[in-house]
Amino acid sequence: MSFPAFLQARWLILRPALARLVRRPDRLWSLHSLVWLMAGMALALLLYVLALIPFTPAISDIRKAKMEQPAQLVSGDGRLLAEYRWVNREWVPLDEIAKPVVDALIATEDHRFYDHWGMDWRRTLSAVVRTLGGDKQGGSTITQQL
Image (cartoon, rainbow, N blue to C red; front, side, top):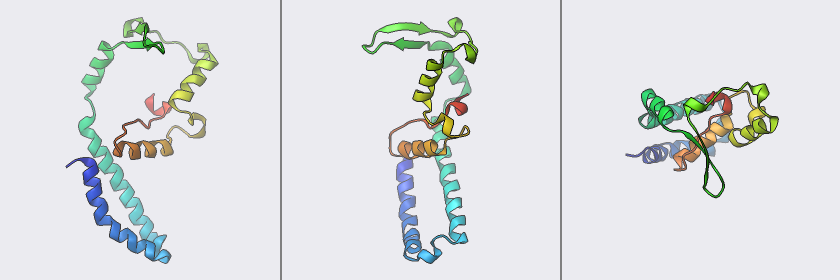
């Protein structure tokens, strides 16, 4: 059974209970309901993480990929402009990198970089929803990647 089918089956079980809560708005936001909502969210997050474990590469595979695959700089028309390998890369202090380069990185990787403290919950939850819908994408911030 695929993970989306698994979630759909669970939704069919939970749907009548949620419908009863909506019909009784005085009970909707009771403490009891909030506890169940939080427990359900924690369970959903746990199931999501467990579903992703089979697709996670081993550390040895990641190290091997880093050594074997060079980064390629490609022009808009598809021409290879440069190829960077681990042996020809060097660390540069942040203060030596031009501000437009830093701004471009932030704009492409994490445009809400200055709006959160390192964990962008909105982006992470959006990535979860889109991944469950079949559109795989990352939800990590620059801080999480480092």
